[in-house]
Length: 422
Image 1 (tube, rainbow, N blue to C red):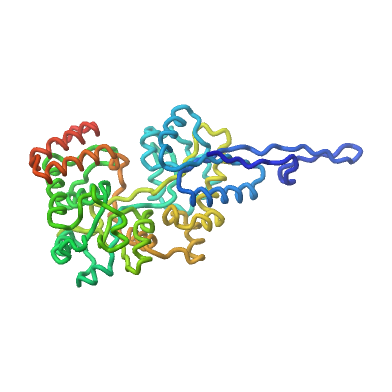
Image 2: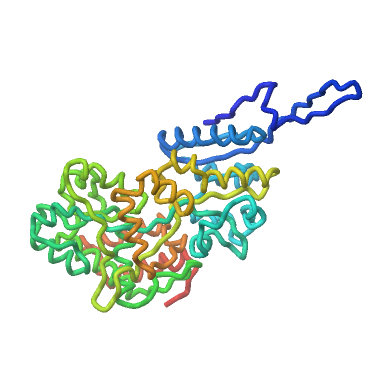
C-alpha cells in the first residue's frame, strides 16, 4: 500500500524564495518539497497512528514530502530482500535487528548515522543501546525499544494453589506436582521454548550457546542436556508440548504462565488481566549457584535505518529524529512498539501516565538485570529452531535416544553456522 500527500501550487512561505524587481514588485518562485520515502510493517492500528504522525511531520516541515510504504509482516522481508539487493529501499525504514548482519555484514549496507548525528538527537540513547546498531564502527541503525523473553505468571492461579512466584527451575517442577495438569505452571511456543532450555543449560555449563558472530559453543553433550530437559518439562507436566500451545488458554487460566517478548506482553496477557487475573512479570529462572538473568538475552524489538542510497540524508535524518524523539510520535505510538529507548519519548509517556501495565512491568524487570547478554541474530534462525523441536519430539516419543539425537542436532547446527566447535 502506498500513500503520498499531495501538495498544491501554493505552499507556506517557509518554502518560498522571494525577490524584488527594481520597480518593487514581488516575484515568487515555488520550491517543490524534497521527496523521501518511509517503510514499515505492522497491523492496522500501527498504520493509522504512523500515517497520522507523518502528517504532523509534514506540517512541521512543509519543505519535505514523505511517501509511505507499509504492509503486514508477511511478505515484508521478501520485499526487503528485493529492495536491498536492487538498491530501491526506502530512505527511512523499520528493520529487524537480525537484518544488520544479513544486509550489512561489513557495516556498509545501511547509511552511517554518525554522519547525521547533528540532526538525530542521540543524547537519549546510552552506549549499550547504540551498540546494537553498530557494525564495523558504523552506526547502521537505532533501536526503538529493547526486548527480552519475559516470564509472565498468573499470580491469581499461583495464589489459588498456595504457590509463590517461581524463581528457580525446580520451582516449576514443584508447581507442576501441585497443579497436576489442572493448570500448567508455564507454557510457550517453539522459539521461546528453545530460549528457555538453552538458558537452563547455559547456567549448568557456564558456557554461552553461541557467540555474537554465530560461532557455536555447545557440543553434542550440551544438546543432549537440552533435549532431556525439554522432555522432562513435558513429561512432568510443567508445560504442554509447544505444538499444542494455545494463547486462549492464557486468558482462561489453563496456563498459569507463559514466556514471551516484552513487546508481546499486552497482546499475550492483556485478555487474562481483563478476565480478572493478576499477571506479574516474574524473575528469570536460575539454577543453584547461578544468578537470575544468567543465560538470558536482550535485543532491540525493532530498529530504524536509513538507505545508503538516499539522495536526501539530511531530510531522512530529520524524519528519523521525529520518529524516535518527538513528543508527537511518542503520544501517538505509546508503548505499541515496546517501551521506547529514547529518553525524551519515555519522558513524554511518563508525563502522560502511559508507563504502566504488564508491558512496563516486564521492561522494569529487564532493567533490574545487568547480566543479560546481547542476542546474536543467528540465535533466532527459524529453520534451526524447527530442527531442534523435531529432535525433541523424536526423543519424547522414544523414536530416538537423547544420546543419538544429540549428535544429529549438533551436526545440523554446526553445519548451518559453519562451526567446527566440538
